[in-house]
Image (cartoon, rainbow, N blue to C red; front, side, top):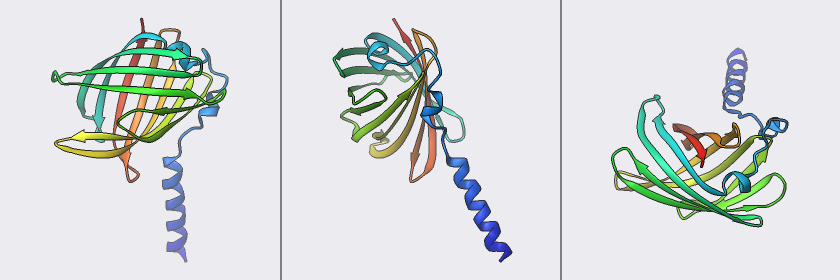
Length: 175
């Protein structure tokens, strides 16, 4: 009996440790993030990928051109990595209501789901990630926080089967 109780408590603590804050908890934070306003025009981003041990594995810059027409936007992202390689992702984003977004891109499996409240946006999606001649489908839990009219910070947790593979950190700057 004592062992099963300890196992139950241990399982509950493990699941509680995996819980994320609700994006709604940022409802009153300022400035309010409006994707169509922030991602309209030219932006630069600087980022890095850290493996699960915290080691920086990749550094990169991104040039972004955003265009919106009504509730539909396109983000054309051009990545340049520290080793000189490049890639491109084009997001197509639709604002569904005051707080919800849906997005697609060629390397996204299905549809990305997003929610924005206050200065925060949380995206969740599956990305096809090429690594050493193979392509893996990886879960992204992507959080963005608007700092001011020109700066936004982004932290993404990458996982597979619930296990953390690493994190991506980005700093966006609107030109």
